[in-house]
Amino acid sequence: MKFLFATGGTAGHINPALATASYIREIKPDSEFLFIGTADHMEARLVPEAGFDFDTIEIRGFKRSLSPKAIVDNVDTVFKLIKSEHESKKIIKDFAPDVVIGFGGYVSGPVLDEAVKLGIPCCIHEQNAFPGITNKQLAKKVDRVMLTVEDAKKHLDCKNEPAVTGLPVRGEILNKDKTAARSELGIDSDKKLVLSFGGSLGAAPLNDAMYDILLKHAEDGSVYHIHSVGTNGKDYLDKFKNEGFEEIRENVFRKGTVEVRLYIDDMDRCMSAANLVIGRAGASSLSEIEAMGKASILIPSPYVAENHQFHNAMALVNRNAARIIEEKDLNSDALGALIDELLSDDELLFEIEKNAKDMAILDSRERIAGIILSLVK
Image 1 (cartoon, helix red, strand yellow):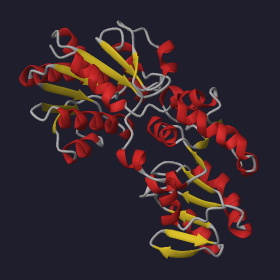
Image 2 (tube, rainbow, N blue to C red; image 1 turned 90 degrees about the vertical axis):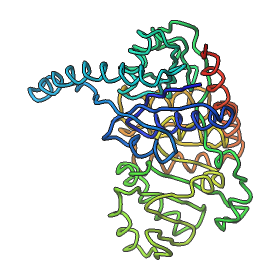
Image 3 (cartoon, helix red, strand yellow; image 1 turned 90 degrees about the horizontal axis):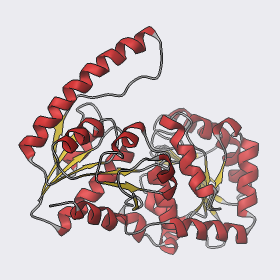
Image 4 (cartoon, rainbow, N blue to C red; image 1 turned 180 degrees about the vertical axis):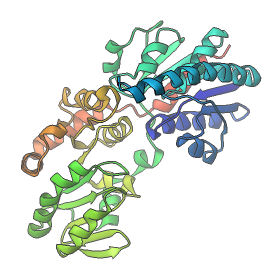
């Protein structure tokens, strides 16, 4: 069997596709795989590193502006789109896949469009509660649509009934033991741990709001707290150093019960040990929060397409599985008060944890793979 995956742009699109392809490779070891992406985004690195063949087309999105430069760029995008359709058709015909799968990103558009025209079975996966433009258009044409959350269904006009499959979660997240994780981190059993981060690059508004809270927790020792400033937030580490935080290893500073890191490279351990998680509302992070059954305060990024992180967060908030603070309302006082409210009420914390866990779909890879394999003629 031959499987063609089209995805790119962000890790939120690429990693679930790789997890799915890896699982199919496990259960169907004689299968062939090809990924189509772009040469200038992270799929060009991540896909080959995962051991899959990779080919490229040239495509980009339209700019939502009427400025002269945006108009010129959009005209160029039209020509790139036409070219990408020809490139996609050639790749598809040469590879001759049994099924074509789109996991989002602009690259999915021309590849799935051409596959549909060629009569090849097709399906797509939508990671967010509010679907992107590409998947909205493709949903009308492809054979099957797979959703991370039920909430996305109302925003799509699907050719066939969509299936809620969840989003694949890394095995290390699913398998990590909380007691062992707290022991490895040196967390006392009678104290709570807060984990906060703004993604791998960091988020300045979250770092700003968290600053006074981290200093307070370091002084009173009321809770353990691990915070990542992100790789774009290195200047914040100097501020904590000036406040008496000691560098215990490279780019990791500690004072009392508070640890401030540049980057969290053991997220499975830290999230497993945490009683409260604070961060953005990307689909992958939320799937991990649900899988581990964690209470969370979500601060959606307002800078993403379709404001989809807000809709992702509200899927949990509406089920009493999380709390939300929009970035426009974010400050130390508001965030600190919400942290204190949650950590001081064990019954409420347990209820939110349970509701988050109830949303988790732990066999997502199997569900997605089952739908893909069902399309193979």
